[in-house]
Amino acid sequence: MATSHAIGIDIGGTGIKAAVVDLATGDLVSDRRKLATPEGGRPADILKATRELLAEFDDPAGPRLPIGVCFPAIVKRGHTLSAANISDEWIGLPAEQMFEQELGRDIHFINDADAAGYAETRFGAAKGVDGLVILTTLGTGIGSAFLYDGVLIPNTELGHLEIDGHDAERRAAYSAMERESLSWEDWAERLQRYYSVVEFLFSPDLFIVGGGVSKHQEHFLPLLDLKTPIVPAVHRNNAGILGAASLASR
Image 1 (tube, rainbow, N blue to C red):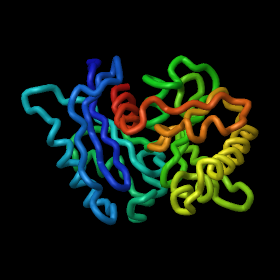
Image 2: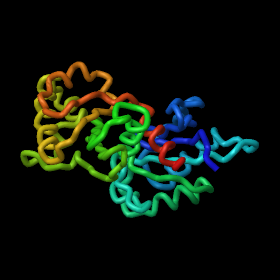
Image 3: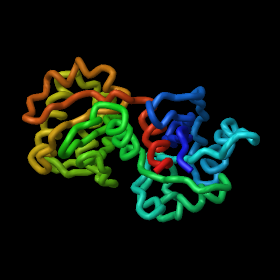
Image 4: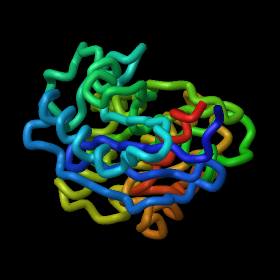
């Protein structure tokens, strides 16, 4: 039976966030609740914290809503093949199965940048856009999502392109700007190089820039000179929740 609501859970290196989502509008129909990610980000600790957070949404008298979980890792067939800002112990684990056992129900499990990209397709800047949309999240690293005619192509990891002898995110992520005390102009030069390479390789129809820094987009997006339109994401802090919930309902 189709449902109009689902729960999205967004697991990050610093916090675990969750809310109930209206799948028709993308609105949150509950408070967004958050727990700090346990120090070290080890599997048993994150699983336990996620179960505690979900318990705040479960109504014994109500329906069991679909659950989507997004996670800072490459996710292939339910296994986590990398680990960003969490314990390396996650690498190679059957994480989807582990969350299902801990939570006592089926979930949809997906990479966090892919969830954010899907949210923009359903409810944000990519809605109704034909062709190839590339979302990048600029934060501690650079996450990415490919969406072709609204269909998600998972696990692209464009932050790890090697450009000028460097892992791209090492020089162009927002953390590089903070770490090296770069001006907006100096950082934009690095973004220009990064997006120019991605543009040449993939010929996208639209770039969307997410991550917390996108709320300051007026300081750097106008400095970029690209053939492809580049716009800020509509959903920043809630993007993972929205995307995970939407995918869980399918």
